[in-house]
Amino acid sequence: MTGQTPPPTTPDPRLQGKRVLIVFNPKSGHGDSGLPDFLRFLREAGADVTERELQPDTEMAGYVSDLKSFDALVGAGGDGTVSSLAYAARYQNVPLLAYPAGTANLIAQNLDLPKDPAELAAIVAGGHAVRVDLGEVEVQGEKNGFAMLAGAGADAAMIRDSEELKERFGAMAYVMSAMKQISPKKTTFHLEIDGQKRSFEGIGVMVANFGMANYRLPITSDISPSDGRFTVVLLKAGNLLRLVPNLIDSVRAKLNLGDPLFSGNLETLEARTVTVDADDPFPLQYDGELHVETTPFTARILPGAIRFLTPARKADLDT
Image 1 (cartoon, one colour):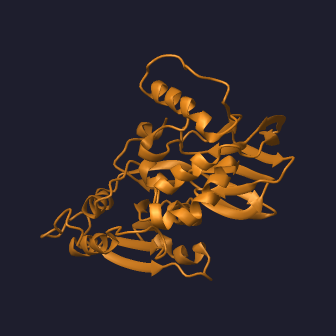
Image 2 (tube, helix red, strand yellow):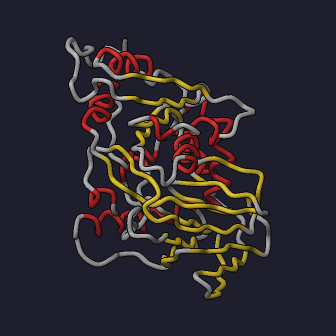
Image 3 (cartoon, helix red, strand yellow):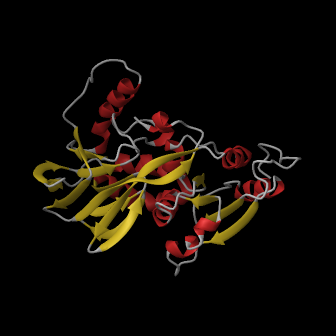
């Protein structure tokens, strides 16, 4: 028990006979995610629950090969687990709950999901879902999916440096790692955006689908996960800390507080397909997972590829 919410005492007619598939990563997060309580709440309410634990040698598609025989899908793990599962389940029209069982759980935060297991079970029961886009990233002929963002440069270096800190400090590891990026490597990036080429000097490139960081703070304004386009963020600042003023501008824009106060640290573009290369190879991350692949990479938007269970309206997911 989590001690947060007592289990339901009577069956929920909305869950009676509802088939729910749970795919979970036993290695995600550090601490109690409340997943056992969540599963018990679903079963006591009348749901037919199937659990599948991720194994090192099984591809994600293997866990959802029979997905159409289920009414709902739950991905319990970090952002990497959720985005991989969403990509495997793309265009199958079965709603997915991004159960927050990882360290940062940015996808769950973007979807405005609670952390309480009983409240999450109620979201499955309610069945309200929003259809959003996914991203597909291709490196050296291999394709993978992402829900939030893919990036090369300083943000990938930040994630790399946070790995050894996550077990001890949890989500604060990302903040501590960002503060270490005082003098990140700067290079010339070469982009092809919907067939148009351009170059710039900077510390990184982010290809964003969802647009909120921790505490639902907007990375930048005008990012929507349901408009059929990425927002490509060109990081021109000398270090990540210089991007804090741009975060302030994004909050001001969200609250309609007037024109930006700061500029020059970053630039945003829109794209359906973007290829990123650099004079110096950079590590690549997507949805918080660092990968051995480096630039160049290509990202493509997959419009309306997944339905996420959420209490939020579609407009609430935009920055």
